[in-house]
Length: 116
Image (cartoon, rainbow, N blue to C red; front, side):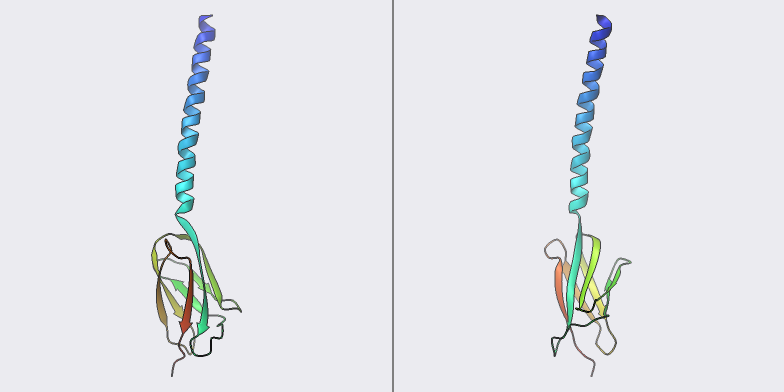
């Protein structure tokens, strides 16, 4: 009888401890995934409004680089929320730096000016 009580108390302790740890792990997982986002945008010619394909976009402060597709769209995945500067670099256009706060906005429209 004593053995059964000790076994029951032990199993109860393990169950409660496991439940508490699982709850804490879920909080940590939720917090870490909410701190990651995607950042996307479109780059167009300032004068014509034409979408620009092949523009190099650098997410400064990271090692991430993206290029616009045929529709002028670029995307960065797995970006920690915060304030970043995007540097757009395209032949025959002036380089442009754009600041974005991914805590507030994850989409940006950038207009590049042709060099004269």
